[in-house]
Amino acid sequence: MTPVVSAQRICKSFGRVEVLKGIDLEVHEREVLCLIGPSGSGKSTLLRCINHLEKIDAGRLYVDGELVGYRQRGDKLHELREKEIALQRKDIGMVFQRFNLFPHMTAVENVMEAPVQVRREPKAQARQRALELLERVGLGDKAFNYPGQLSGGQQQRVAIARALAMQPKLMLFDEPTSALDPELVGDVLGVMKQLAKDGMTMVVVTHEMQFAREVADTVLFMDGGVVVEKGPPEQVIGNPQHERTKSFLARVLNPNS
Amino acid sequence: MSQNPEAAPPKPEAPLDAEPIRAVPVRHYGRWAAGLVILFLAFIVVRSVVTNDALHWPVVGEYLFDYRILQGLQNTLILTVISMVIGVVGGILLAIMRLSPNPLMSGAAAVYIWLFRGTPVLTQLVIWNFLALAYSRIGLGIPFGPTFISWDTNTLINLFTASLLGLGLNEAAYMAEIVRGGIQSVDGGQLEAASALGMKRTTTLRRIILPQAMRVIIPPTGNETISMLKTTSLVVAIGYFELMVAAQSIYSRNLQTVPLLIVAALWYLFLTSVLTVGQYFVEKYFARGTSREVVDRTKWGTRMFGFKAGQGGGGQGGGSTA
Image: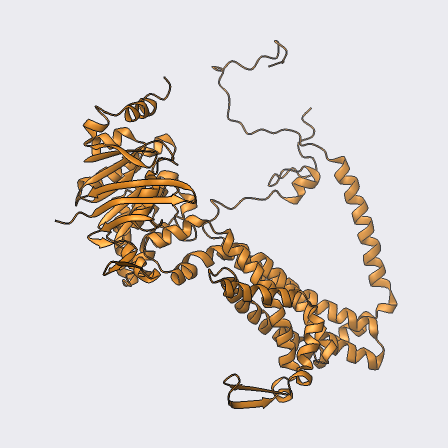
């Protein structure tokens, strides 16, 4: 069976700064992969490469067996047109650290926007499904509020519903709880846990070690643009082998010591 | 910190009644004095306007709805509306060109803006009017090849179209910069979120970016519209007929200069007021989702006199409690 995400030796530089230095990665169906590591380690960049928000400089990246952002003809790569990239992206849901909800639309309009504009779903049907999705993330009563009237945690759950509305095969989460007040983190993580339980394939960049421990099938620790350690959470978080992993976890788990 | 020990705060366990505070409001003597000066000046101005016979108020009333004035008014409105439509549509196109990754596109837009902002509207109006002197015929065809159809410039460009071209194309240059500012004010995360959902560039622009840019675009556009309303009077220079020309042509005959200028000014003021009200509602529409609640403004009486809004006491203001 083809993995949902397959990355082979991918590299990415911003100007002279090499952010990803040959990353290998595989995510299978129904798998939850958590990317952890210090800031600047390249984990968000890696996530953004998966839906081509960032172009990779070297290596190959496949989603669902399809090359992301390029087409291979013979031994030559051709860049895809913007329209074709959009087509690839519609099967990949993404949740951002800063929510990025559309502020001029109500919660339900946010959720139904892409199904109507991209998948050409009839409005009534899209609205119906959007309301169901909002119900599912526990915001049935906030459907007609604007993002500015919602708390951070509520906004992020609307953002998750918005991504789910496209019925993606894969969900990417870019530090979804880092911009939230501590007491709101639990609601968002709760929704994500349920999503994992329902069998969604997920790649999550996170600093929530407890969440990674409970939900992840695989944890990948990155530092300085390389994968330092990879394995099930009880191994990487519970019993890290590498010195860098140990010191990172010590800092994250006991920030006061 | 440095308070007297005697002035200790009430013990926390003492039951504190949640009684609304009824403090004596601060008396703003400075505001009262300034207010009196303003009122006095206003009185002098109003008195001079009302009692000055040279203003001929009855004549103003007589010509306010004169058919020539109304005709001019109609032309002013038509010119304003069509010029602004040309300006806004052209401005959006130019702004999108200006932000295009294609350097020739953005360069072309930059040159257009440079050219049209760099010359006075009056000059442009006259140039359009005298276009026939430079290009006697205008036609469609293949460059350096055959011409399929062509017109005499003077039949194509009459006073009306010259006015529209002069005002509208100049306006487009200004609107382009306003629209560009609006588009650039939208958070980059919006574009990313839309792309991640699989939306195409044009859809994103139409559904996500422009509606948000509107909030920034509308106030200066209202400004431009009001400004355009008055700039239309420049078509005087090429002899097209609008409100100002109507007033001038009347007073050049009956020599009632001041009353007719007042008539024109009153109409401009009226239209500007209507536009201002319109702008308020448009702004309110595009501001949806941006505020948590409507902020209740303090009543002016409170600001001026320190009265409490909604309290019957009025003049007393609870000042006798001591």
